[in-house]
Amino acid sequence: MLQVNFIRQNKERVINGLKVRNYSEEALSVIDKILEADDKRKITQTELDSNLAESNKLSKEIGGLFKQGKQAEATEMKAQVASLKIKNKALQESLAQIKTTLEENLLSVPNIPHPSVPAGNTEDDNEIYKAWEHDLPVLDDEALPHWELASKYNIFDLELGVKITGAGFPLYRNQGAKLQRALINFFLDEASAAGYEEIQPPLMVNADSARATGQLPDKEGQMYHITKDELYLIPTAEVPVTNIFRNVILQDNEFPIKLTGYTPCFRREAGSYGAHVRGLNRVHQFDKVEIVQIARPEKSYEVLETMLKHVGGLLDKLELPYRILRLCGGDLGFTSALTFDFEVYSAAQKRWLEVSSVSNFETYQSNRLKVRFKEDGKMHLAHTLNGSALALARIVAALLENNQTPEGIKIPKALQPYTKFEMIA
Image (cartoon, rainbow, N blue to C red):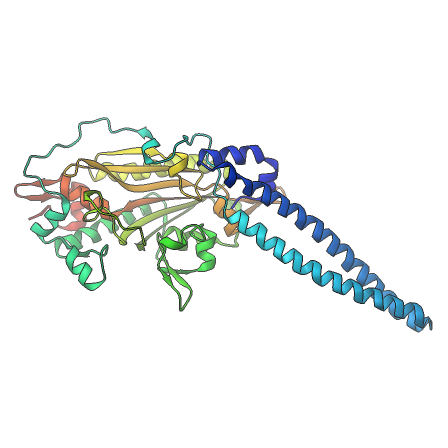
């Protein structure tokens, strides 16, 4: 979340940033509420500290007065101390309420967009950062969408997924299951070669972890919640992997911190209908390899560029046409300062499918996480970044559709050492 001092010192910038996110004038009033609450906190804290100091001073003097036989004065001071204790209890309760209100308001404010983020309301306003400069694949009239290819070649089964669990939980089988495993291993090996440490994290997190990376309270409705144990199924490996460094003070020689992890991901996305969400286009459980970096603030945008190149390199090796979008304010994630989405072209559906988001959160997550480093005798917040490298469901959809032939579905050369077969037939 944003720091109060940052909001106070950069109020105009914060308000302008929220306007880029399409905040109304009414919604912008939260900024004044935060500053007013912080003013009340300071005044109340100062009064409480003064009263406590006075109470301690009087308490020490009472003993001396009794020893000197000054019973009346001592009794009067005891009454003053008792009165101060009543006032202090009320001040402490008031301070606790002010702090709660302040934190609730701070948690409701998203990150401030980077100056390069374009204004806009929806995904239609996103900016093409890097276009695909070659011809897009064109299939013949007999080409099938991936959900029909799945049935034809016995790659995955949506109906069995519904039987076992429900809609949005595909069951992969035969060469489809092997393709999933091959992609996961390929992505992990590529991340390891790029210097990322592989992590295998828990698939459930507690509320503190979910709050620290920004899933709570913003995305509570999208997460699967195990109420009996107060745990949440992870929507991405970003959550457990980044939380490794919660409440950690980093040493300078630890930078850059580069982590990668494969996990299944679980998301309770709102249901909708139509070809754009058929098959693997939108599912509640999918596999993903995530890359996470924790960087010094002055290096974080250089780091972001290296992460973009890493994801682009994966798509090049998979021989998939792709483009990169810079998300507009209205489409930007709650915790992100700047996000780039990668989309691959689905030749059978003749549309672009999002397969990765790469984001810089600057200090928004690290302020919640308390990920800090010491420099010149002062504590500073690190910057956190992450990206999908890659999400499998739509990658599989594009691979199946774009590589279909009358003989079967070709496997890209870079993937063949992992699948151990050249064709799904």
